[in-house]
Length: 138
Image (tube, rainbow, N blue to C red; front, side, top):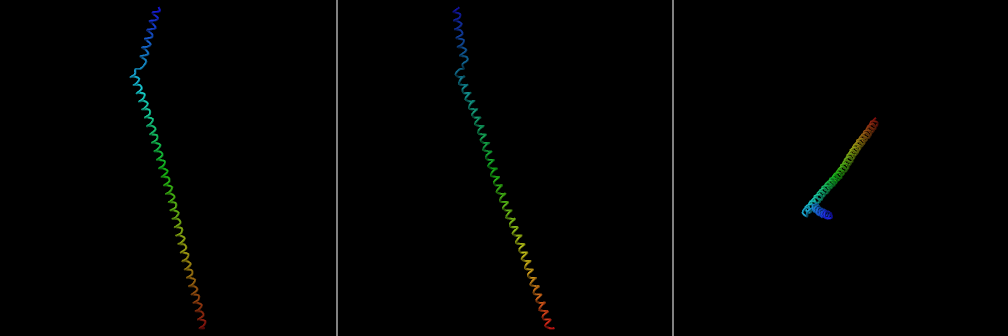
């Protein structure tokens, strides 16, 4: 019985070694799995790198777009301000021209009034002189 038990233990021992040997992957298999893991890791890192690069490109594109919009907005504000200044100058010039025209009209009217007044005074003087002459003849 001891022999049978001993044989049983010996058989179990060899069976365990065999199972252990079968459960342990061979060196080639280990290297293959190691390469596979390395390739998977590299693929993952490359994918992450591409994602980061794409995100950075998108960020840069947004930044350029925002800068362009800011530049366009600034240029638009400058053009609007220049147009407002031009319109203000135009209104000022039109007002000055209107005032100058009104002043010339007033001056001309005043000159005409003065001329009429002188004419009336001259006529009155002539009439007075005529009456004086007529009285002097009488």
